[in-house]
Length: 254
Image (cartoon, rainbow, N blue to C red; front, top):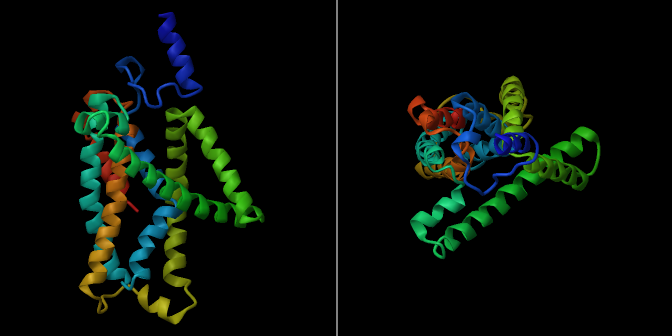
């Protein structure tokens, strides 16, 4: 009892199960918490920029929405099914990769994932740093440092704090989404941009549509590497309550 109480107190403070197996007695959360976690993670500036690539690459809003929707459904299904391993194994992604690749063979996906983490962190830090810099009226470098310090603190406190921030980000993101849409539809000063953002079907190449589908599909599939780690704190019974599909719907919402 004393040991269990100690673990519960520690888990409420500093993260103690970062790459370790999570025992059933320490698991918590449910389908709703997974939904808000992934909804909040996707209603942010990096996801918006990734979605905007469809228009930047030459598509219009009509075909871009179709391409993005297909990409999210295909990639999100892979991500959701991948995350279903978390409650069963109770292990993070890179540890469970040893089952498929072996202890030494797992080095290959680990290197690939580390490169992906570096790229994701770099792009997210730059965009978030620029936003913080504009908000506080400071240099973008200072904004990046502020954002990096915040991320380190969140990482130290771990799973519970991340889920709390996911709920807050979901509310803020949903509230701000109509403003983004209004600015995108009504605000572009450039005539060529206005033509692209008009909601009507325009001539577009098949290649542009396919590129948009692949880009958004990859965005969702890469989330599968986080999905297993995010669901390892759930009890196995939540697999029968739509946990993977909660992640799918939340991830494809933006």
